[in-house]
Length: 356
Image (cartoon, rainbow, N blue to C red; front, side):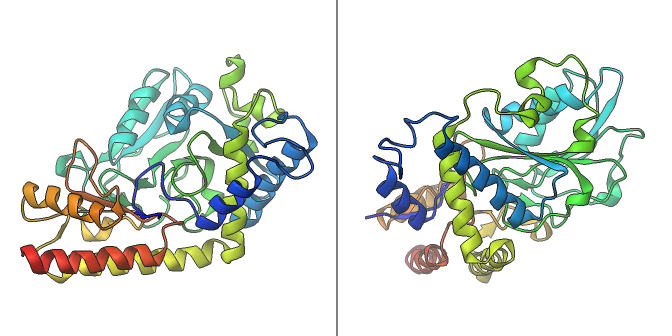
């Protein structure tokens, strides 16, 4: 019996997708073999990849000026690949620091050129998104990088920054959970293992005019232009195959507006329960709370541990907070059903009644 999975990543996948993959795993239609056994240049896989790109274009409203790349190495590779492509050694890029992943992106970018940290919420353990009015953006910055959702600390931007330079966004943990104002972006990247598939694929969206500003003489595999031009090397076939199925599932639901409404309903239910009494306390500031990763604590670390253990016994899985932060974290990505959040809230009621 499958439990309710609140893992921060790899995250839960739609049951319908898992069932479809199960049914096709031994033999992909019209191939006589599994999808993980056929050539990445076969017409069957080519059709899968083309469908995934077409679905992304439909869901996000991407025009032909956008390249869609399926790469590997996760967001961690993108931390340096972005700067390697677009940050000249005598140039500067602006970054906003809202947690572990932005901190790592900043460190990688400094290997290539100047970095100005416009703002940071480290002063309050990354519990909020700094107000844009307080940002110190570098004049002449080639791009502004931000992490739209922060899995560890449970914070999320309410909307895209409004700056004059192109935005580069690490959207790994809220990609396809809400619409994007594409005109503001030069590049968006996302690890697949939160909202759009299993670990193994990284989606990169890069606008062509931004792509043309990249540095010359880049290593072949690190050059976004290599992958925009053609299928250069073996892609993560199975991950892309699953991404295509998740995108089809999302499209069938009604696309991003439909899932955004469900995500808001789930978050409202869970935050409403946290705020109802003093027994549970949110670790993110109210105006910065994430709709994807809900972080909270109980009155003591001992009760946190008891809560996690008893939740697991009730098929509420992977609720332990990040290893350096502690507390509770419920990741309620697109594929997390409303029923899972309802089960968690019911358990929270019972746990407080027994231990409050």
